Image (cartoon, rainbow, N blue to C red; front, side, top):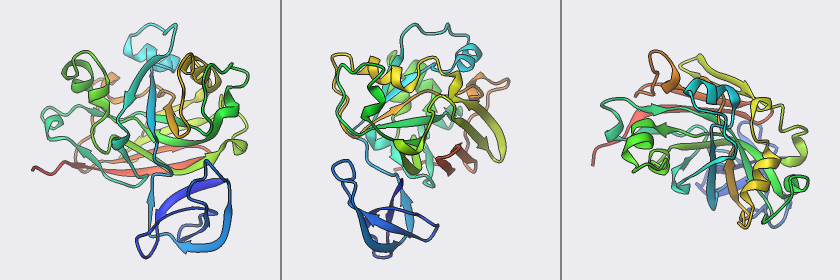
Length: 270
């Protein structure tokens, strides 16, 4: 099943499936609790993020070629950080560049496979880890590099957590529709130019391995979103560097899940 959240003609927040561009079949809003498809259809006015994560766990340097382009060694253990759930925005929502990130430009793009936990997981084995996955979605881990490296006191979270820095969608594809999480194609385009083009086959830690490792003595709550890392081609590793600027259009896609299209704007002054 491919699940969306959207606004209908009356601006009600709805959850649906069988999306065909202008309408969808409604499903029970708490799809983690019950997988109930209703008989009604509704008009889709605007696509929203497919769900609201309770937590966002992120993995850095999880693609071999990306680690190589940054000059960093291949990690022996997953590099874990977090994003503020308030950073989530829709698959066609605007990415707002903070005023503190405009001079100099520093905001980067990172297309990633998002894993949605559908059943609490703690101390799960690698062999049973995928039993806790509800589904998968496309995410972009938008990153303010100066804040990530220098302005966050040595921690990455600040530079990853500005509002709108986590576009997600367009759909949440349930786990039964993804046969092999180790062979998914990812791509990002900036103003039509391919910037990232990779496969999850380049991952250092697989989805199952990540869930098992992250759940060691730690409960991964239902509704947790795990960002699994980004392939090579990010902006800061290029010569010269390429950063997002107002007026840009960022496209992020995963084959079998869909494509997000996010316009880039400057944050309004307050």
